[in-house]
Each structure stands twice: as structure tokens, then as C-alpha cells.
Image: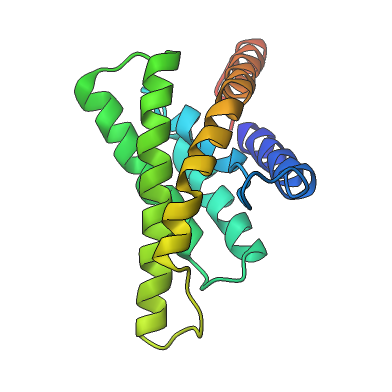
Length: 177
């Protein structure tokens, strides 16, 4: 049941991301709400639901992108994994300072990995186009600011999902799957 709720939240965020924010771009940059949701769940220490969220979010973005397939899925999974490991090693608490720092690292890593993946696919002649590194650097600041502005609403959504699933788990008296 909880994976169905996560899937519904991912679909809603993807619809908002592609529908609304496609018309509200800043310097041709849109926020990545799915990356923000993955970030909020990856910093959680008690469960591994972030792998499901990262995988499904990456698949959806790969289906909607024109780039080589797999770049978003792999970038989501690697970014979430490293954030989770980083949060567990340093025993960080999930507060707004931690989220802001993790967001900066995550957005930079995510965009760099997507560029690197598309460049490697281009060099191996798997695709005919790739994202230019200058374009990546040009839009990185706008992407960071735009994502930072929407971090807190997505964080509140993730907390709402966690509380709702905990209440559903308590009511059912067992594990919600």
C-alpha cells in the first residue's frame, strides 16, 4: 500500500513539474520536484524507501526525456545512495540547514552525472546529441535557486507522507506493504 501512495505522490509531482513549471521557467530551468522528494527520503535513516522513489522517479523522467535512456534513473539512484550513506556516516539530523547543504551537493552531482552520462553515450555513438557543459554551468545557479525555493514545500509533503503511512501502519496493526 505504501508503494502505491509513493507512486501516486510521484505522479502528482511529475504532473506539477511538467505541467505547471514548464511555463514558469527561470533562465530555461525548471525545478526537479522528484529530485527534491528523493532527497528528503534519502536523508531518512530508518528505512530504504528512497530506493523505490529514486528508481521510479528516474524511470518516469527517462520516459519523458529525449536523452539516452537510463541517465536519470542512474543519476537518481546514485545521488540518493550517496546522500543516504553521507547522512548515516555523519549522523546528520534532518533540518533546513542540512537539507539546504544536501540540496546544493545533490543538484550539482545530479546535473554533472546527467551531463557525463549523455557525453559518454555521445562519444560511444549511442546517441547523436548531448548536453553541452557550458549550458550546464550556465543554468546551474538558476536551478539551485529554483530548487531551494521549492525545497520546503516538498519537505512538508514528504513529512506528510511519512506521518500518513505511520498512521496507516498503526491502524492496520502491522506492516504496510
